[in-house]
Length: 225
Length: 241
Length: 44
Image (cartoon, rainbow over all chains, first blue to last red; front, side):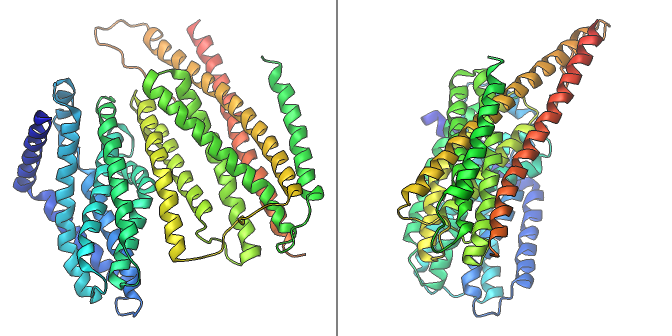
């Protein structure tokens, strides 16, 4: 168990360092996120009284698109340098690679969300009417739900034609309960009309089930050539 | 074995015709909805058949993951495809039923919406199978089937709770059912199950043929070109179905 | 009554969907049979 975590951390820090040095992906992602928020603000009138009910959905759809763009380049570097082949023959557990990638994606997407949220607050004049602390578990659990399956399906899509479209095609249907949870929970907290507790529990269950499934089956995907 | 197929086909055709007659003529007219309710006799059996097929796909996928048996993989492909066909019927007949009865095409009804998500998952499964170039495609597809199965209860519960917060009409109605209607329902279910079995059998034979052609093509590319080279020959791309 | 057309639409739609799928199977079958025959002749 010790080696699993040390390998995971080593791979994770390497990824973060590489990402930070190049900053290519980071910058374009940031700008993309800003564009998404602006486009949505034009498409869905922020001044309407009912906007508080739909903003939850808008925010998470925006996060979803940003996440897909980020997830699509998860394995790009590994693919370019034949790292995956090296990993297959090494005695390192495949889960370490998966966890490192998933955590890296989680951090990356969280950064994007942290940058997009103030923009949404500004454009939609958001005020939270319900218990705002509950937003934190929803964001964490929701982001992890997207990222854990996204990292897995990104690996599955590696050997497919139209790789970039394959990822959302696989990810979106499976993510429906999680997306429903994120959106409903966020809306419940923003409007303060209902309790978000069920949705938080749902997201937690979803995360536990699919993190387990991903860890159990990633070895198969890694060795699929 | 060869003789059994046409015999079963004829029997199934007769059964389906009988079931249709029962649905349109014999079954009593529903009090509130009228004759439109008879869509029920096609909608519900198709749903049950689709679920049965998808469940078979799950079992075949798990068997494949454990034993790597090619027959299990073939069964998985077959049941996924035929399941999607029956699921499409459910999703088309559902709104056609809802429109005259409730005035709206879609009501985010728990069962119908869960069926929609199941349809989406299995369509993505079929797309993965078609677009994947890996020799391990069956393994990946089987993993996806497992993910889909894990997702289904979560889908159901999330939509169910969502609906308690946003109540809307229920398609298909709950509650008890008139025994005469139940009888007609069961006859139609039997007929459609036999029909599904026939289609799966045909599709399985087609799958065997497809794999046979693939092997023949691979063999020919190894032997047929005639020139000897030191480089290893690469087998051709999987022939698409 | 008006709603009967929905009943017929549903039943026809059902059989149309099945017909399309069965038709595609028949087409694949003939195509593959043809390919197999060609491969058999090619090797001779």
